[in-house]
Amino acid sequence: MSIQQPKGHWFWGNTKQFASNTLGFVQDCMANYSGVCYAKIGFKNFYLPLNAVLADHVLRQNNKSYKKSFAYAGLKVFLGNGLLTNEGQEWLAQRRLIQPAFYKESISKLTDLMLKETQEMIAQWKVEKEFSLTHHINTLTRNIITKAIFGKDLEGNKALEALPHILASFRQYGNDKMKNLLKLPLWMPTASNRQFKTHFRTFKALLSEAIAQRKQSPEKYQDILALFIQLEDEEGNRMNEQQVFDEIATLFIAGQETTSNALQFAFYLLATHHEVKTKVKQSIVKGGEEATKLVDACSKESLRLYPPAWAISREAINDDVLGQVKVKKGDTVFVPIYAFHRDPSQWEQADIFIPERFLEEYPKKYYLPFGTGPRFCIGNHFAMQEMNIVIAEVLKQLDIRLISPTKLSFTTLMTLAPKEEIRLALV
Ligand code: HEM
Image 1 (cartoon, rainbow, N blue to C red):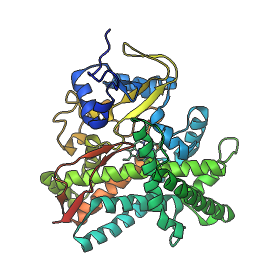
Image 2 (cartoon, rainbow, N blue to C red):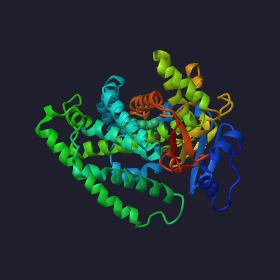
Image 3 (cartoon, protein in one colour):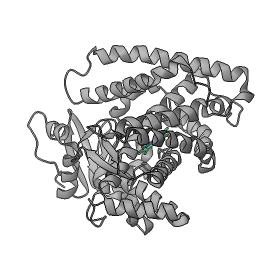
Image 4 (cartoon, rainbow, N blue to C red):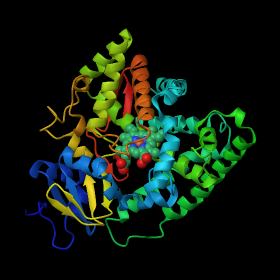
């Protein structure tokens, strides 16, 4: 069978097309080919599975033939052996240990925290009347995850003031690493690398202090950090300080930006779809189960149109056959979630914001905002609960309209994110 590959440059392959219009590129692959499509990107062999059976083969059925791809290499530098970047038996043991902290019942204990933080944000919006949604949602999601992890412990702590900069520099570092994979040279001693090291040390010191406090008087603390210190496996082993550090850093990196982007997209969609927004608002005012379901459908629909984890990539650790295509050890398989979510053969009016579609049967195998298989997002209940609480509370209290941008543009590095700040005003 001849390999399906979008026409590219003799030397660069498809690198430039991919880098200049990433979402368009994966959507074109989905529209023009079926089965598996090959692309040469950054001198690497990429295979794109273009249907749910093939994606499921890589991420679930035959997941043992794959590991996280080179795209996670930059993250590994500072997330070490945290859940997102770990592999094999060690990953499995950690996942089993940590999983209960992220069950729906455990996360529901964070409801009051999420609501209180949202109400504080709304109070700010009422004062400002016209504001940067991007700034406020970034602050909100950062406050929620920080307080879920550290409890009230960090209030008034100087290092907390540094946290926004620490996280921004982690994000910058991860994004820089990913960008550099697409161009030469692969490594440069950039200012952001130097800044990253300073922030990394501050973060480590902050965490060490918090761990020491919890070890001294464990009864005082009921946050995620306290729980992580006390977790024991079947043989009574606990995580050492390095493991705790890696897992906590991972929660910040995997959980904050993704949820922030998801909420920004959701409010952008609501602010630009007057009828949907009015219907959801009216339903919230009435209350009851229908309102809960409709808000949840809004969150799901915005994650469909703008999935922050817009692609999942893996590297083959042995030769495999994907459909009828041979994938060699070392090759990259790239599941284009964004294109799955907008595939017109699966979704009616695929590009239109219709939350109600999630009140009925929908093509679940073509809906992968949190991935699938054993590496499925551990924070999915956390994220969905947070999105639903924030959307419901904002629409209950306020009406919003869009100021800018009139047309969304995106960055597609570690996550799918709005390129420009989104600004809203109260109606
Ligand atoms: C809307 C928000 C979120 C989205 C779209 C999202 C998406 C994803 C996806 C697609 C994966 C799988 C990656 C892969 O298979 O390579 C993943 C993994 C992960 N996510 Fe999330 N996530 C979100 C929120 C969160 C939150 C709030 C947390 C924690 C508080 C979190 C923690 C993690 C962790 C630790 C992993 C690695 C799991 C493992 O490999 O065992 N995520 N996420």
